[in-house]
Length: 298
Image 1 (cartoon, rainbow, N blue to C red):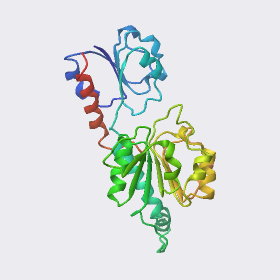
Image 2 (image 1 turned 90 degrees about the vertical axis):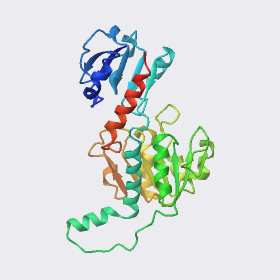
Image 3 (image 1 turned 135 degrees about the vertical axis):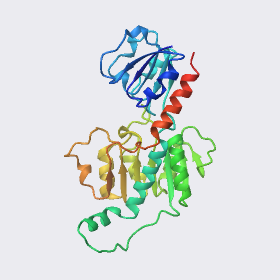
Image 4 (image 1 turned 180 degrees about the horizontal axis):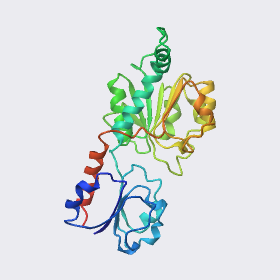
């Protein structure tokens, strides 16, 4: 196969000798740069946002795509499907750090870490008698795929009841039960923590809106580690002011989050810059996924 590998796969150089035994390879460090070959030479691509800069229609012999990301939202999937192009994502690569992030964010709010960090900066010895426990809480996770399952493992280990909401209702050992989204209101209004791990699709865009937050339990926590466009930001701001104990946001409708955005000043909100996927085990997991998929290609 004629294969184009972009710099989105940081460890590619370690595997080039093995890959070149079966495939002809061209390299492109930065995906927005000009191609190192004619587009019709390319039969396979390993990259991330490559098609944001190069129209997929130009690659008439394309038959294999390997993404270094978990989401498909930056790929013209209708074209991929209609042209029978094999496509693989980085499923499972980033799930562990994302799940750890979700757990740490919820614990940070419940244990009021911000308060103690401020006191430490000021050299003040001051207690907080209102610290809350995670044990015994009900956790609702939207999306029971790899990320959702890794989240469920960790919250279950902390003594929580974990309910999954997913269009595909099937038994999952990490969830106490999984229900269809049509029943989500009855779960959400009893949940102490709601975690979003869904993909961004036409159906899920702005799914978490004013009506959704109205259903959420008073004093609950909202966590989004999926995509910012799943959430109506104004509705979330209103909920933070009116009923939520707090929220943990790693993704936003518009990124980067502008300095004047009202979210920055919410005292019950943890903000990180789309960073939850980062972990020191990612490179090895990604390389394993890529090489496994490549080995199945002719």
